[in-house]
Length: 262
Length: 262
Image (cartoon, rainbow over all chains, first blue to last red; front, side, top):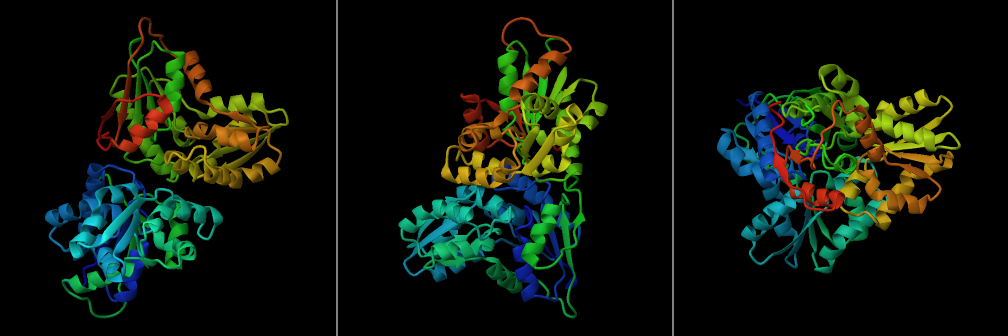
């Protein structure tokens, strides 16, 4: 049982930021990552489709006999977490709760901003979680559909990206937020731009918090040497490998699987 | 046979520009449109996946007993047209050839620019088609992955969109192009911005040319009243309906179908 892997899925490449944080904290564990690159992105799709894809992804990882599932995708975490917990026998960890906890402990003024995909923001998952932890918090949410394409284009430290970030964030900053949840696994890659524009904001990147949540909830801990890391995708593209290298800081070996069959 | 519909598919909403052009030219024909919104976009995906999805889409439309298929998606036209022609008994019209023809007849200096998705540009389908029509043409291609997200965000007449367009097009303009193929069905929506920046360019929007190609190749023409227009999607979202309205200039009734079963 201890040797069984931890399964991690995301709609695409962004969840590798979570894989990396888990790998750094728990180097002994075996990790299997699945990026649903044939159907990415999820953030513009309907709740029904997001749930269907999330269950298929979990089923794929289940076939590798995992001991735990991490939903690294904010959109899936926001819409499908409860259903995954009902459907599968292993513990399921999402990214919303750990991020919300961090935000609540970081804010001084009690005003928290949340940015994410259209579907994540529409679910109000972060707002609900933050308010259940501290009913006095005020939460300001904003969908930022252009940030993922800008990051995937590699325009990380770029005046256009800065201008787009300003357009999205200005209304939240005017409301007086002091803390901003980066509610999409891609966003940590433009922390620099956001921090330059708004140095007073606490930026909440949940990857490390998720890794700690994984550690706390591990059914059995693997002992011994470094574990393996396996990366699966539903569509193998140069694009994935290029961005994976940007996130992991090294070449990533990728294997293609057919997700429609699940 | 004459009453059978013309089937049209696209990866998402953009192909409605083609549907509209066909409707305007051939109001008597019955039209069935399928937008693969559950798996959109195609432009960042691999050739194998684009071909697989295109065949599934054609099979779905075949089940409605169509008399002709129009591939309104540039990415699918660039990668899957030949295979669709081999697989299916009805005539198959793509968007690349009509666009290439228009470009060749429009250019005076023989230097043509082509913009499109990563996959369309990587296929060099426009370059091949243009050069087969006129071997003296020089073709300059550029992938513009941010334009679709900007258009879908509704930032049509916007300084940020202008800046992004300038970033992408400046190198082509410096090469001396006098004609630019809008090699993605979304792009006609930002014709205004492109024309403002580069008023000397002939902008090639192939929707009308495709409609004429459809008329020329129709196996049988339907006589009588206005035909019906049916719009199917694989994922029903507000987003689709919002952008559909922007393109069609009126509310569009949409029906959801399951594409995985095809």
